[in-house]
Amino acid sequence: MKKISFLFVVMSLFLTSCATHYGLPKNYNQNTTEVVLTKKNFKVVKLVKGEAQATYIFGIGGLAKNGLIAEAKAKMLKSAGMEGAARTVVNEIVEVKTSGFLFVNKYKVIVSGQIVEFTE
Image 1 (tube, rainbow, N blue to C red):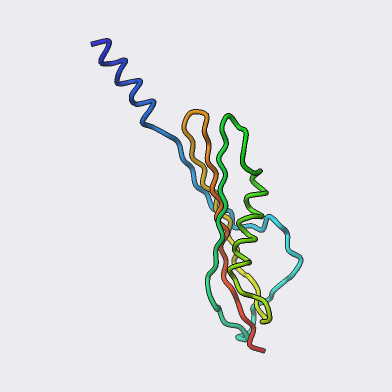
Image 2 (cartoon, one colour):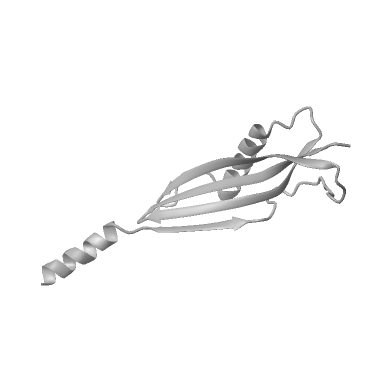
C-alpha cells in the first residue's frame, strides 16, 4: 500500500503544472499622444494584436517582462498598417500568461488594441 501511495504522489507531481493569466488595461510605454473621441468623426477600422513569449529555466533566459511587452507592441503596430493614414491605436490591452513546471517557466504577452481612423 505504501508503494502505491508513493507512486501516486510522484505521478501527481509530474502530471501537474501551474498557470496564471491576467489582463492589464494600462499603458506600459506611456504614450504622450492624447486622443479624444467625443465627436462622430472616426470609425473603428480593425482589431490588431501582437504576441511575444519567453522561456526561463532556473530563472535564466528570455527577455524581461517589459521587453516582452515592447516586442509584442512592436509586432502589433507592424500589423496595424497605420502609415499614410490618420489612424491611431485605442483601447490597448496587455495580457500576460505565465505557466510553469518545476524549474521551467514560460511567459506569453499579448498586446491588443483597436485601430481608429479619423474621417475629418
